[in-house]
Image (cartoon, rainbow, N blue to C red):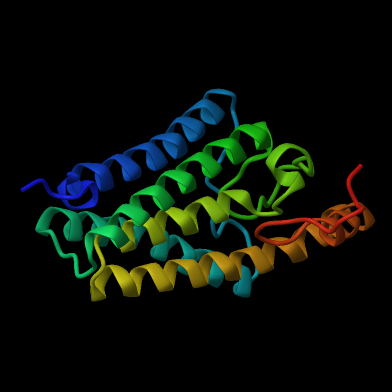
Length: 204
């Protein structure tokens, strides 16, 4: 008897593929910026106490989730049916794609953490015309996708922790961008939603 497609897919390989593509994009972008003399990683550098704390916790969450995901994949810790796992694979791929488009659109303005010295540009075109935080959205979708493929308590706790800390980081960046770009950012913030969508009639 033939198994349905969702039942027969190699989810261990597919989950590793989602992770490899996502972190490959991240590392290649970081390497390319380093070659251009740009310090991409600016988490916790020269910040006030609150900003430093949030960025440090975000760093712990986004690094700590990787071994949790890998352990779940290697040991096969999955408690959801095949159709949910297939949905997770699709969600993870969408997260990879959104993250790729976002770092390409950001060009050399992309940073991990709030820049303490660099003066970056406010990017509002491309995918940023439809999401103020597409890179964070890509992170969230990748986390949710892997969680659906390998759902267990360990990965679930790290996924919730990481998504919450990324949201806290977004709130800090909004404050920074308001200070740095003033009315230009406030107008952009009014046009485009935090995660996805834009108000009708506001397109340039």
